[in-house]
Image (cartoon, rainbow, N blue to C red; front, top):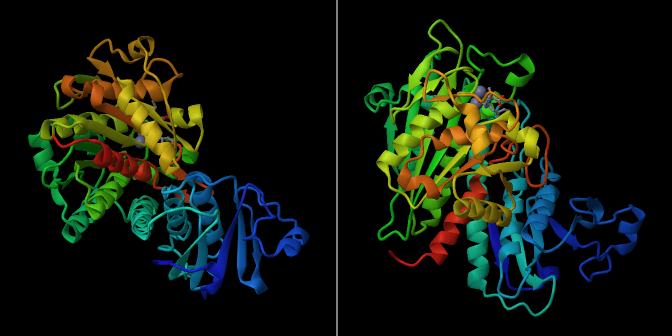
Length: 490
Ligand code: BES
Ligand code: ZN
Ligand code: ZN
């Protein structure tokens, strides 16, 4: 898709269709030309409400305000309604929330790219987005905004990169387990590195054994698809900071011998969402060429059953020497992450360490389908994640650790148990399990982001389609962009 900023009034631009955002139900605004028709159609301009006046070539959509989130969602919903239609070019006016602030322009661009996402791989009849050109008029919704063309162009560019990376992640997550297994995830990473300046290192079972990643290998053991650990690195000269990202990449989670009930197993192809998010973030970071050193680690593993499967009752030794009593093979993500976090910290001494995982159903029970749970030992990285997620239009909330819940993952026979002895607070106890594998130096720099809720939802919501949303991608790009702007040179 091409975006073009045009320095003229919206009326002077020719296109197949115009999208008009109606803010705060202000149907009297000068941009609303079809007041009577809209009234007749019962259009009230509520958030994401659309009204397509086909013969006028105008598509109206409501938004609750000029902030990024409502604009992104409204534009995405409007564009999603055009999938399969034949419009090739669309024009839209500029929506800017503050003088010199291009946040809502960026949200608008993200909305277009995110809303035009389709996943057609398994369809015989492919309904694709046909929009090729988006013309953005510099004519503003409100007068007198002094924004330079350069800053507008930058907002468009970065919005495009960040939303395209989100769609890249969505594609990986939506791909079925038989088409996307650990080796394929590694291939995707290698291909990404080849096309960019990213460095890529893939660890196969022999290397994983050498690195003493026995818990990751145990989870992988019953699968015919051998595990991979992926390490991608973006290494600019004189980086302002170093960030490590770690992602759970369970290409399928059957539960293992603690087999999931049939209804719960469906959608478990999405258990690679954390790892897929890391791949998307790395893509964007390299395309934006941010002055931050970023390392992405993905643990790509399939959790299956079989004669060689790891078992409840096993005791495993993680890379850092801690022993883990396995009482449920469906709590496999934390076992994979235990070793992977140790490996990532051994390889890179980072200023921030973030992990992304569809770790617990409990997180979905606790905060619902649309919100990520943010955990860790210290407030600073958690607050930063929540703040940047909000700015990026993702919902995230803190879930605090406490010493009482920590006791529930004690084991009688090993250092720690892979499940808690209570059925409550499962997202937090899983996070506290991970904290056992964070070393002293990273203790206050780490945040764990449980994306089990938003990563995969079986209906469209806001700018997200049915299926994979690409949760984690936009929030982390924002965060890294912010560090690039605010941190002084080392
Ligand atoms: N991948 C699941 C968590 C999950 C559940 C993600 C629903 C997305 C949607 C994870 O590996 C898992 O099975 N967790 C168990 C942990 C339990 C055995 C302590 C769970 O949440 O039930
Ligand atoms: Zn599981
Ligand atoms: Zn899992």
